[in-house]
Image 1 (tube, rainbow, N blue to C red):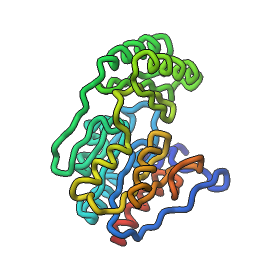
Image 2 (cartoon, one colour):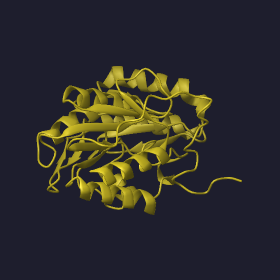
Image 3 (cartoon, rainbow, N blue to C red):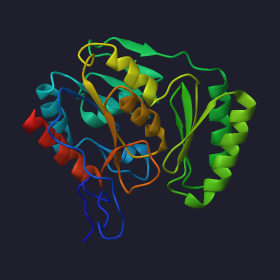
Image 4 (cartoon, rainbow, N blue to C red):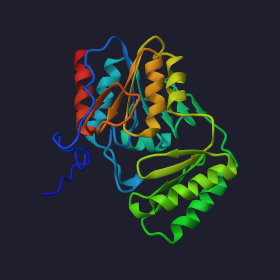
Length: 262
C-alpha cells in the first residue's frame, strides 16, 4: 500500500541496503539547532509546492524551540515565505535562498539585493523548460532554480546550461538534489549560521546543523568551526558532517528526544 503520510512517504530506506554515520547525541550542552527543510524536516517531493504543512513537524519544531529558548532556525534554499508556509510560521529565526534572506530572532529581516543577471537566468531557464515536460523553473527574485526531479534524463543538459550561464553572468551555481540554482553571490548556509551565532539567543551556544545535500556542507563546516557539528540526513557520502540520521522520521524523533532531554 502506498504511504500517503507526507512526513513518512518516501522517507525511509532499508538499513541493510545503505550505511549511515553514527547518530548524534540527544543530550547536548546548550545547543543551537540549524535545520534544513527539504530532505530533513520534510521529505523530498516532485515539485516544491507538493511539500505541505504537517502537524507532527509543526509540534516538534515548536516544542524544541520553546525548550531551547528560541535557539532553533530553519536554514533552507527555499524563500522565507515558503519556509513559513511549510512550518506554519514555526521558529522565527530563518534563512532562505542559501543565506540571501535572513530573519533574526527579533523578527527583523535582511535581504540581499538581487544581481541583475538573475532575470537573465530566469528567462534562460524558462526557455529550457518550455520544451521539456517535467522541468520546473522557480523564480526566487534573488536566484533562479531549475528543478528536473520530474525529468531526470534532462540532468546533464540542465547542469550544462547552468554552468554556461554561471560563467557568462558571474552568478553562483548551487547544485542540489535534482535541482540546480543560479544565485546572487556572497552568501551560503554557512554564512547564515555564522550570522545567527553572533546574535541572541544563539550567541555562546553549540551549533548543530542538520542537512541532506551538498548545499548544506558550508553549514556543516561552519558549525564544526564554532565547536559544534553537522548531521547528514540520508546515506553516508563524503561530507563534513560528523553524525548522521537516516531520514525525516528519524530527524523528528531526534528533535523530540533533544526536547525531552534539555
